[in-house]
Image (cartoon, rainbow, N blue to C red):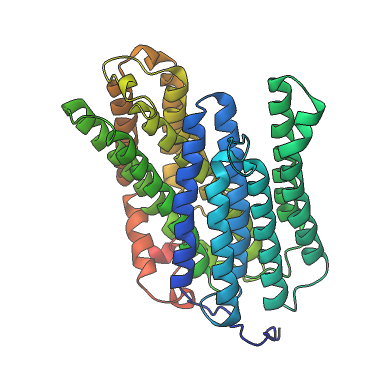
Length: 429
């Protein structure tokens, strides 16, 4: 297969290319974006508010994922593409600024929902333009599909800002109609991602692809630590507060270990060994789709940590009293969703660490079973129990997968994929 001819000012990603500084700066926008989503949900701490936050996250993830597919083909730290990518970053920042008003307008300024929709439209058009210019060989149905979704998704979100209020009178009907239009916009985005033909997609550097997704997980985990710090800074220092803050950091570190200890390494190695023609499907399923629920789980957990520390009403921080139901279920539900997405990722991308699937499913079952039982437990006890379960899961995984962990690290140090032994075969024993 002849390599695609690249336009002037465009450079192709090569095997072994790592994440560039431009991409790192671009991803920093999502630190702020994730904080904004958590703020949106914390200010409307109801089931409806959580749904709003998840939908905004899905829209942000759609934009980030399309950019990730672009950066796996062309370098965005060189030439005219860098200018376009930095422009995209600026508009994404404005999108994040408007995120808390994505559903409800605040009086005294521009219409927040319409600002969000217009910014999202500009983001999608810029991404389409960058793809069109950078990849002239990619034409036909993929570009038509992306163009249609670039207009349909933001159009439906813009309609959600105005249409329901003109049709319905009751607030619950307006809210349901808004959510319905948003869900339709998200479904169109992800159906296009599923339905587009994959032959024109390529993963030139599996290392780069896996690293981009690892970094966005780091950013989400960092948002959890920021949430704990911001919520705790509103309270007078006390032993329960300090202990709660330490538990929040320990819990975040546990989730980081669960992702990075073996699964991220095994996923990258599996993608490297995968035949090039099959890489796009594996990358789409395991990374584009299954990393979204991981991000959602982390952000929902972050929301729970924020509310456990009394965010919004410092006087509500009472570590000796039971947590409200919504706070409890965001704490435990966020971890459950993260673990389930991890299991799905493992089953889709690799069986090199199959021994840790069962402990993770057992932890999910334990968390689901405990959540309704510990509702009467003091808030500090609830957080302690959750952290203890996650730390115990790590200990169990290290015990049952010690040999696999060592082999994965040996394989990672042996050089390029062509020279590596298969760690799942007898030669790696």
